[in-house]
Image (tube, rainbow, N blue to C red; front, side):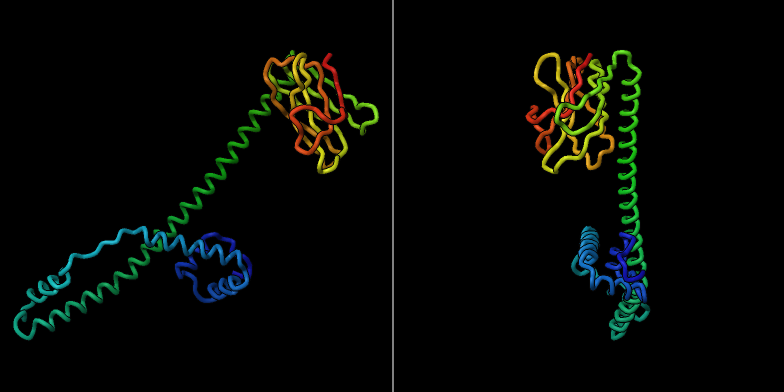
Length: 263
């Protein structure tokens, strides 16, 4: 590991567990000393480790367990009488200490393996969530593509050309609309406007107030596209693009830039 950001999220948990040594530990600590972001991530890792340790149930032996155990060990010895009782008890304690010395590394290794498995599962869950989000996005795009294909092939779909109005910026656009499906597609060319302004597309129904079909502000003069849904069965008299305050308005307030009647 060079003096760069750790590339693996689990590095912070491994360092917090004391699993780093040698050059790897030195490189990690050298970077940590000058990186507030990594210091914060290490703090989060240490919190996770502490929470994991505290989550293990604590079991305390009943009072007198050790004393009874020592007496039983001493009683089983051929020299369990008189002055030999105490040496046998001490020898038993030494045996238990040696066994504990052997079991402690095993328990530590088991805890480390458990933590690493937990970290691995956590990473897998995050990856699965990312993949699920990608799949949902692709499915949404596929549904939209099918809807557009159906829109283009439907006999009752109309294509409306929008013309620029007098003394307005040059631009062209067209709207493909299907009243039965309540679906429209706008494609047009209009110049960018100031950051505090937006273009807004309107469906002008045969009766009633104009319906907003989308707001846009091109950063270049490339083609602008909108796919919008309106209440199915809405008969359109015309489509128009107006210039409004940034974010659009509930009803048209600005000048009409493009207008196209439905023939």
